[in-house]
Image (cartoon, rainbow, N blue to C red; front, side, top):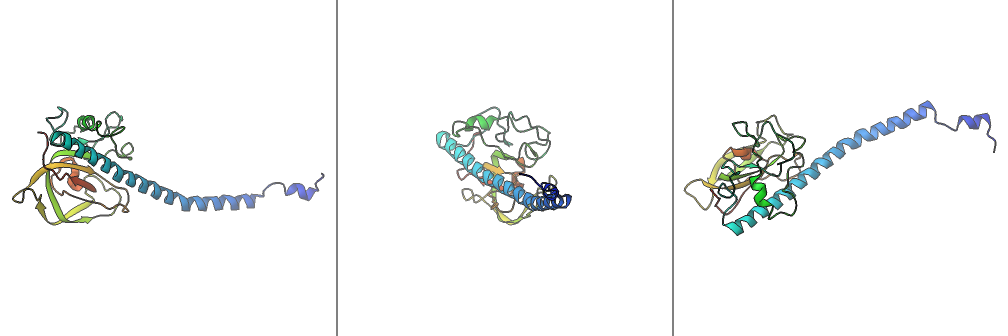
Length: 230
């Protein structure tokens, strides 16, 4: 088959046509990238909820077998100040936040992790964003925590603020655990430090005691049975 000179000129795209295509692709990418980022944040938040449910079940199973939650009598590596979960051996060392105590010591010795492996299939969960931002995104466990639930919480829906500014503030008086109406009960507390979106329902059982910054966390659970190994 033979082509005329005009036909040969139409075998490729003109510079204008290429420019239009590139412009359309750029617009579509500009629109879709933020949506993809939001989707990924939501997915990570969903994993955080799933992880804390798995962890809570493991702690309750430990309690059923031992009559108390993991504490200092169960492992020399566990302290009364608690520790971060699932991050031992990841090669990431936080420099601030709840994983670092006032003495600049990192709370990731893994004593609790070892005890939980009997009750969790696979590795102990860690926050999906821990490797990228270990100062904000982590799970914590405190075996000796003051159990005082706020009557309400004023949630500040923003991206994680500059440490140590909390994302939420307790509002109104707090009341002690029903098991000790005359004072503050101490019990074990599990927490997700931060979510990335406002699409996940935040929750607090405790709003006092600054160990591991659980009093500022986006989600924490005070276990219903009072008792810990100490």
